[in-house]
Length: 63
Ligand SMILES: [Zn+2]
Image (tube, rainbow, N blue to C red; front, side, top):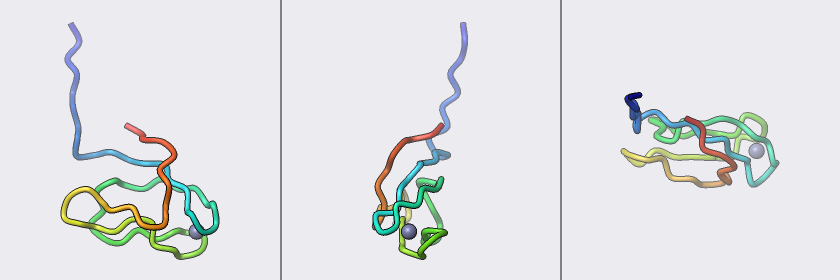
């Protein structure tokens, strides 16, 4: 039987910037503000736990 290893603390999201449609991979629990690499818009901001999504749209969750 396979044992499933859960890693709830390390999840990545593919997000799209709402302002310029640029896509990038971000960590879902960032320790600092995550900015769009293309236009500088704030995509995620840290809240101490799960990041709060600001100017981004989650396209896909990556494991
Ligand atoms: Zn952008």
